[in-house]
Image 1 (cartoon, rainbow, N blue to C red):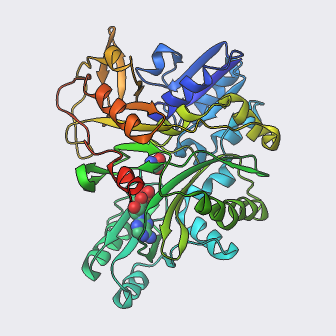
Image 2: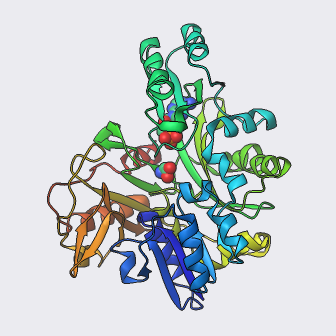
Image 3: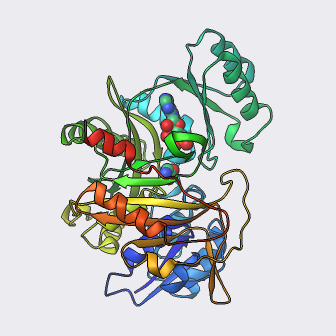
Length: 424
Ligand code: AMP
Ligand code: GLY
């Protein structure tokens, strides 16, 4: 089988490694891929958002199955376009991808179907939003409606900050069209848990839970990033909470999407907060999370391609989705000054030594004249696996310390919050 993976980050490299384990796979392609994916697949230089280009290329090259990993091509309808030319693809169609593509849609969906989430109001009018803020309790959360590279969420401690946030989205158009509408919602507290789940629109099979570390610096300080590291499983997510989430959130969400005529097939990401009043949805993503995938998929014992095909064919109920009961930790190595600005093109050394005892996942890397060089903000994810979390953390850091490039940065406390939770 010839498989194409759309995307070029750490998530896509992890998916590629897992799919390559299936003996029926004869050739892997990546669009656009990265320096790590180049070692196991042929990289074709399309932008992941080039729906027409990628679809035509896939047809010409008789691709048997496509994995569309990032949010933007899913929201642009790449799965629909591939289906039109007869190529099955993993991921939701455009109608279902709106669950991530519009926060106004997802909040209204949760309200309509009684799925627990933060109380909220939506606004298309600046003055109405400002008037609402005058009487609202602080802190409060302001979110741009559309996709904003994970940066469209602002937690505001004062009325002034909240008005400034709304103004930046609606007046200054900081997030372009994404900020034309805003959601203003209640500030929730409690541990955060990420749960990715496979679904074919009929059944939902959750993967092992995980915990992201979004801030750039240790002790959750500094700016919000795409994610500086992850651990799995998340110790805050007890079997009791998992059962509650299944009954109160996962199944009702799948049913709600069906009732709306927007059947979701693929990987649905539940960003959850375990509040004093029970689990609530912070956000949905219509895809695998990054860097959650880097710790979740290495723990998957079943065959990934078979599961992905089952989500498309509607046969997930009969398909095994089994996880190892060990733990994994991913430490992201970023370019210095990420997420603000960074330089690229530095040669990376130590990759082989790091790979002896850990999985080295490439994100922002490129193969240039035989060297792997930096080519993005988040450069690598180093994944340690072990029977228990402390072992996984040690393995990840031991390996990460063998890697060098100019001006590199990593957090030194990935997993420490989870360990504190385990030792409670
Ligand atoms: P997002 O970029 O949508 O993943 O959101 C970024 C982060 O903002 C989340 O991971 C939460 O930590 C935080 N957040 C979003 N919504 C809320 C909320 N209603 N209450 C408290 N924190 C929130
Ligand atoms: N790690 C969060 C995300 O993928 O959006």
